[in-house]
Image (cartoon, rainbow, N blue to C red; front, side, top):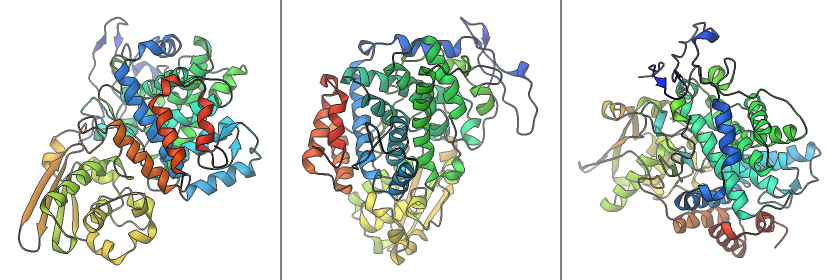
Length: 501
């Protein structure tokens, strides 16, 4: 069941149609058919330039710290991914090895632009980074994008260029996350359903917002940064399971930063890029819901509601409810792999088509394979960074266990709505016993959140995977825990660099 049409309502203060009816595939649309919400991009820009640190609720600040720590740990771990050395060689070939910005987990420094790109790739390389939940039932999977990866690398790279204290930096980070998440919530579901990778597309706006805030832009410059970022945005879901998925996330971070830096030098761009007839919402989505963004920025903050999830496993978020529930069932019932006859996993159709690698061959493909994720839990009772490799995927016992797992569309899961990742488990054992379970969200979601200490434990695991010195790891955790007291964000740089402090 795919929603291609929005109903029409009015946007009180603006007196415009909130939703437009998106075109069906192949149908020509004229600009007169598109919703009119004048001043929408202006509203977003004013939110960025006017919001102060004191306007952000204390609980939102604390939730943000967990995602920031998570992102830094994943940048360390991701520097060891196969895409890491390729990305760094690309920087070297580009002659961009002179600069102040850290390529996290290495000895290298580069320009802010390339640091944002490479660190963004690293954060998303293992598909282990945080995810935005959605409020509307027609929002596929109940999630929209990965909010930290487009924003953190760009904001940190800029902060290494000039003095920025912890409060200033967190303010910019929260501006970026809030803007990109509300844009993702507003654009028509067709955007994601038809193949766009929201992290790569909407994420560029988050990066631009954060950079505009750090650069103290006025309204006009902020709007022009959005205009240029929109033209730089991109990403397609067909690339899921390849190195290009994390590239799309890193490119979003790079795009927002480049857009802001060019605008700072006098570059021009359209200033009403979101709502324009030939702008982002029309071109990339066909339509949008103005009520999801107009007067909604910081009201409520996305971190507070509907929330942001931290991933417990380095795989696609859609696997996590089933993995969380299977891990619980294994422990409670002491299930051993040789006992298992079959495992049936029911989900909605969007989950079965996005977790598209039913016979994975590589570690990247395994991240988007429900069959592999459940098989490795049954065999090893864990699914960490080391499990998602071509060597593990190809093991005979793993291949045999995957063949026992039936991943299908279940009517109950389909009817539960796409704002949930409903996963229905039925484990049949060789002795005839049947064990059942069900979950809509996994560990790390707002429904079952990680504490800061649990996020720190995940960070330690990522740092250990990267062979990072324990003393540096503990100092990074302490720095982020007290981020609002930091006098200068560049104090974090040597802790994330392989050749210093």
